[in-house]
Image (tube, rainbow, N blue to C red; front, side):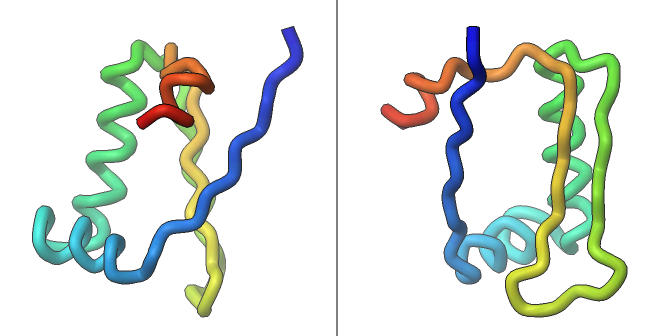
Amino acid sequence: MAKEELNFFVEPRLLDHISIAMYSDTNKAIGELIANSYDADAEIVKVKLPEKIQKNSEIIIDDDGNGMEINDIKKR
C-alpha cells in the first residue's frame, strides 16, 4: 500500500501552549513526543533538529511505531 503524506502547520501559539503551559520547557515537550513514539511500540526513534532555530525551522521526529491510520488523523 502506498503511503499518503499529510502535511499540516501548527500555529506558534500552540507551540507556546505545549512547551510553556503543559511543560516547563521545549525539551520536555520534545521528550513527550519521543515518549509517544515508544508508546506506539517504536523500536527506533530519530530526532532531527536544525543547526540554528529560525522562523519556519523544523523539528522532525520519525519512528517505526504503530501510529494512527491516515483517516483517523484527518477526522481528528
